[in-house]
Image (tube, rainbow, N blue to C red; front, side, top):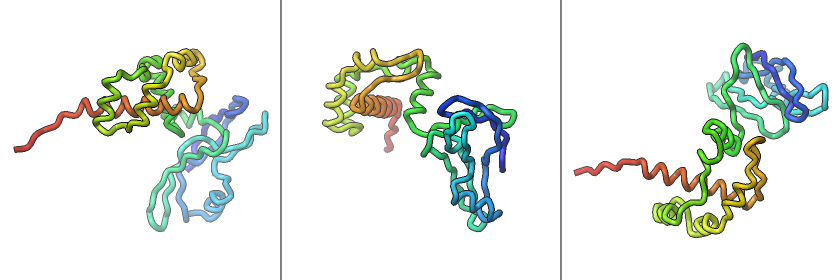
Length: 192
């Protein structure tokens, strides 16, 4: 099934109308099946800058013969964002967890809502005791210069200017504190 959409080029920002596949049935039409294997499903070329790539939108796929189902989210190229589909605004689709983190950041009003370092020594010890992190990860959390990282968060442009080591520390911090918070909310029931 194809839907009318407005696409935005990820390179130059040009917007244009198109039709993209949102659902495919494999084995129903050989021409469509062939397009999958030639990478022609939802593939576009920008008339302004020549950027080429896929529309970043999930495609639900069903195999007619076996009824097996899948969802495809292309992420291999700098393609085209789907900014409008039909008469509705599509739900936000994420292609990696870093993008999701920044969306949560936006929803909750800034880095303090999601990312409020540094972790306290007690938090690190509790995470170690509960097996959430290991000693090497605890050491990363202890040695990270969180103040310096926070200085390099650009709230206005929603960007960070961190090294790969700092990005790893951020991911570790988010995982550690998130899992720690979950364990604190669990109420254990004792059986007789």
